[in-house]
Amino acid sequence: MTGADGLLGSNLVRLLLKNQHKVSVLLHPSSKSKTLDGLDIEKFEGDILKPETLEKGISGQDAIIHAAANTSVWPARSEIVNKVNIDGTKNMLATSIKQSVKRFVYIGSGSSVNTPASEKSPYAFPGQKFGLDYIDSKHTALNLVMD
Image 1 (cartoon, rainbow, N blue to C red):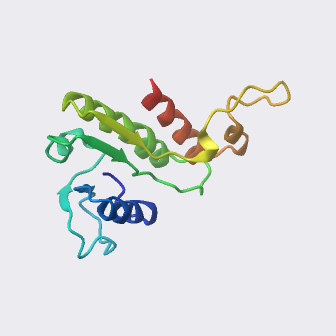
Image 2 (cartoon, one colour):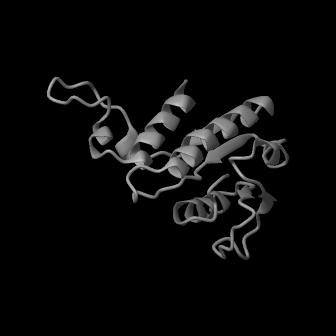
């Protein structure tokens, strides 16, 4: 699992453990989070922007839950948000495929999901109207996963 040391991720880890799943997490080398302390999990160090750091944590896994994201909405346009959310997802997908992972679960954002087209809206998806790289990048990453 990526993003396991964040609010959503650490709660998801606890839910998985409660349901008797064996959990391994990929933690960024700079993480100082204490949210996973004391949990019976296997920790791997890696950076989703550096594909060469991903194989050890992904190798031998049955499933990947990709919850890591840059959720910044300020500034509205941000190169790092796009890099983390799009390139990071590409790297996770490519490494998961290379390692023959059976299941890839992508944690997205409700605002980034396509809805049926409407003649009243000029936007490709509803969240596009906000002009935020966070929402736009999650939409792009979702489409990468779906493809």
